[in-house]
Length: 245
Length: 58
Image (cartoon, rainbow over all chains, first blue to last red):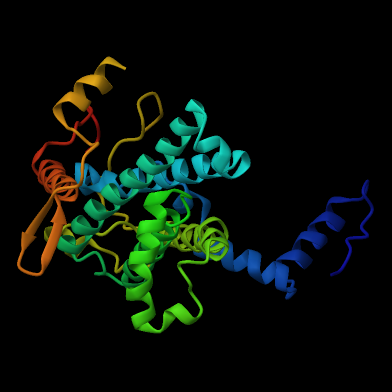
């Protein structure tokens, strides 16, 4: 990595030359920066206007799923800090434990409605196959995360679930490396590996939604820009009240 | 607390779970209720109009 040794109190020419040098740099940091700027321009990453067809309740379930996931992670971090002796005994622990459970319920509730909506819209249209695929993978990894959570509760319920599940999982052969009766292994999967997987895949899914844009209704397909950029359809929803249109 | 007591009186969650049996399908009433609720919310999300701001450039 080169170091800019230009005179800090130097001339405009020196500064321009330094900028030009940065722009043409072939260092991996510069190339990665240019690729990121090209793939996700700031106005596309955090847009303040959306196509008019987005003004439908069916389009809110994706963000509701993300909000639920945030609550799952927040309450899960609190449970991890305090531990089972807290969430099993104290009233506050019971509350946070229940909040964690109901956040998961809301997460799957909204995610399945989101999935139904996108399925019937054929949301993979317009070069959005990867957006759809990451959503499917995210759903499957979330199921595994929820399952390992159920067997990590350290109560009779988790004992029952794990002893019932072992036969099914052993029948697939996965039991050789994924032992549902091994509490330590299940807990590590639940609080380390699978949350990382869900967060990365869901994050990629959201970035792809920003990159490809939300899928238009079938009637508006002619206006779609084939998903290469966010669809700049002429009719757009106005920005929030108080902001210039 | 009052709401929880009322709900507890309406829906007893202390007993054994009750299940629906349709051939090889076995489904608890609780999960069936959640699925029905999801279908209702899905239909409402499609048919209910989304609030629009008056005078917007839509």
